[in-house]
Amino acid sequence: MDNEKIGAFVAQRRRALQMTQQQLAETLGVTNKAVSKWERGMGLPDITALPPLARALQISVDELLAGEMAPCAVKNVQEEYKHHSCTETVLPMKNTAPILTVDDIYTPQACRLASLAGRGTGKRRWVMRVLFGLLTLTAAGALWWAVQEDDIGLYALAATAGALAVLYGLEVFGGLLSRRNLRVTARKRGARSASFFEQEVLLQSKGESTRLSYTGITEIWQGPQGLCLFWGMRALALCAHDVTEEKLQELCEHLHRQAPQAVWKQGKKRSKRQKVLAVLAVALCVLCAGAYGLGVRASVSLEGKLALFYKNPITGKTIHLRGMHAEQFPYAVQSGLKLQWLTGDVCAATYVGEDGRTHQYIATFGDRGSGISYYNVGTAITGEWAPADKNSAGWHLEASEGRNGHITLENGSYCYEYEYSECVQAGTLALALCKNGIPEWTVALGEDFVFQNNDSGSVAAGGSIVVCRVSMEKTAPVAMDYIG
Image 1 (cartoon, rainbow, N blue to C red):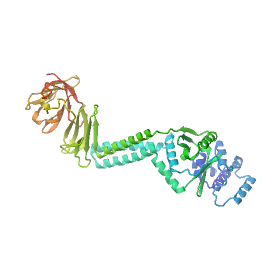
Image 2: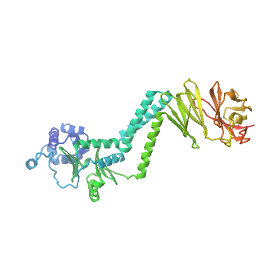
Image 3: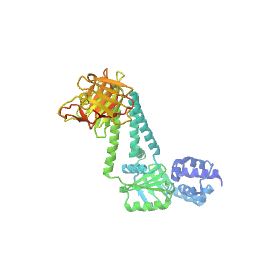
Image 4: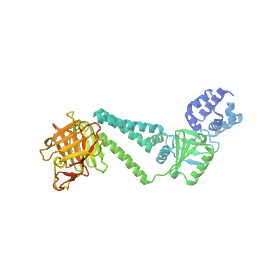
């Protein structure tokens, strides 16, 4: 066999049918480089590809291997051209009765179906999924870095990556970009019909036509919405309301016979409730990401209490949002905002202020007493407290009675003393132990804290307290029991 002669004949027939190398490659399910290699005489198709190649070029296998058309075939082609309109772009199909014809395959419904089927096939859009994952990680990493460094440029990077992640997420989970590309193609090409013949599919539009062989079909998606065929990345969607059920069933049976190599995928119709939940979930994620990027910080305790803060990314001014009220931090936040729940209703917000020193804002929810009177936490914890856990480095707290008393915290190696006058109370649940206006420790009343007299809020009769160091580093609260 003469490879160069066969290659030249393949190129001649392809041009006669006004097909590009890419169109022929898609019809056969190969790459355009393979077609180019055949036409240059650098190789021959695999023996299993000869029949579909011959059908695509409208010749016999013998003519393909001979590198020329039989004399009678040339005469028939000439006769067909004599009686055919000069405006036609392709030779007439050998079998003129199609199994099914769809007048327009670029309707909005078909575009949505093609996008839905593309998301349901395992090998498609893996690049989009990888990019979506990378952009999501980039946005999260940039946002974390921006919070640590408090850099406006990093905030902008996080916002850009987040916006791209949302865009790619809409493509991965909603097919937004695919539908847009199909609509753009539809506007460029106009209405395009698809005719399903016995051996191939003919796509036609004004001034252009393409023949697709059933042997090139890689995947077929079938669901309540219709049928979608894939030749590699090319999709052809048939909506259920555009085709009768009988015709669609007949086409499916025909595809089972003509495209046994195709992988069938079954699609399920999502209920309206599932669609609403999916939209709400995406909207919630976008809202949370946007709020975090704008400076909103939130933490929820195990009891369901919500501590909500807003930090202005530019000025650093931070407020605690509580219902319809807001309370501003005494210092602007220079960097970081560490949220830590000491009890189920006491949340400590630790930060580095504009003066470069560590400060703390304590958000409290609820009351340990009857709620009738406002009591002094320093007086309430009068007595001695020791940790129930033996692995707590031997810490011991002692609070003397009276508003002019003091609190001593020691563990054998360190000893800290604080006057009540220097301490700052938060609500009726916590007390910040301060030196020169800077908090060093936080004491919170345990959820099992017991007063001697509940109405007056006097000294403790039992229960526990929680003590935690004020630091931007990771700290562990120490629970201490009342010992007398």
